[in-house]
Image 1 (cartoon, rainbow, N blue to C red):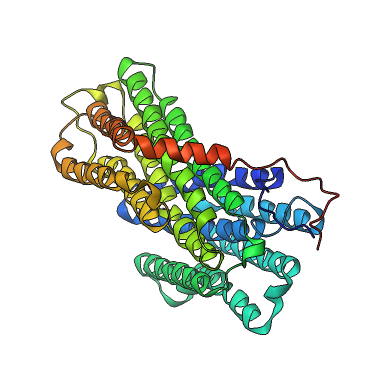
Image 2: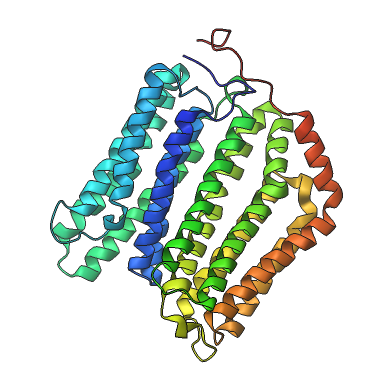
Amino acid sequence: MWRVGKATRVSTTELIFDLVFVFAFIQVTTLMASNFTGGGVARGVLVLAVLWSAWSVSAWLSTRVRVDFGVVRVGFLTVMAALFLLAVNAPEAFTDLPGGLDGPLVFAVCYLIVRVLLLALRWYSLPPARGLWVAGLQVATLAGPVLILAAALVPQLIFDRPAQIALAQVGLWVLAVVIDYLVGIGLPLPQRRIFSPAHWAERHSLIVIIALGESIISVGLAGTRLPASWPLLLSSLFGVTLTAALAWIYFDIVALAGEQALQRCPFEQRAKLARDAYTFLHLPMILGIIILSLGLQKELSYGSPESYLPETPLPGFTLYTLYGGVVLFLLAQVGFQLRVARLVSTIVWPRLAAAGLLVGLTPNVRSMPALGVLAILTAICLALIVVEVAVAGGQRRRLREVALLEAPAPRPDPSGPGVS
């Protein structure tokens, strides 16, 4: 089979695979919006963690083995189909809707199928993973899916009260997510010859784009439920501008610095750095974007045009999702920079300051109308960009020069070396 080389870029098969997550992220937002409370958002976070775990396993596989050829390609597309069914049932991951199949059970079975298929692909494509010790760790990755399956079946047999059933379900989900990520820490990491930093960084950049795209979709769909008005148009404009600002914050410097830091990292430490900075720290980035998109959706659709008047303040929980999503995104960015991208350490403090400012402003803008709350949030993100350009101008220039010098070579001829 084909191994990933230094110049390998993301394949069309991976791009098609990731398109499922456009829908999956929308479904997570829908789950949160349908139960717009702290508990509802927490359930959405758990579903996102499960989806991210499956995506991360696929990312580790595709950064070591080309997934656009032969049996691996067929297997990868089969996983995609199972993931799509998983996303379809995401709104019923905890609560079954009347009629039809049992929603939580369908979700759990689909997730178990996804993880079994990924485990089989890993075993087939990576012979070193067939050792007894490694195989044992691999099988341990199924503990999380089994616990989620138990959450769909067991609480109803033990408890009678809905509150007790819901609490037991959430407890089993939390345990499943914790075990899944702890096992991920214990899994053997790829060696130097079968890990491509450029491919790895590009794959994560694309999933961030998908999350940002889901945010834009939320803005557009929410606005269609209201008649056209100047407040609605301005709010939509602020929402799109805010999404573009988050994209700038990620891609302008840090994405380049992260890839270059991985390239320069010693081979024996590279995979650990990739796991910490990308697998673990990109999850809160994605979560921050999705929580923001939830807030934008609620801000745009929670009422009539009269809701934008000064005497109609934005509901408190909507405010927390708007500001909290951006704060989480910025803090995850800071963690990423401190772990892998110290080439741009000068912009850590502006991002911490912006996050602190948003936390401090939250109680003070509760009485403001929706348009004002969103305008302030957008202005702070744009001001952060201006400050970063000012304080990191030299670093930005050097990063771009290095990126141009290290541009990938043309894709090698598949008939050449590389088959194992």
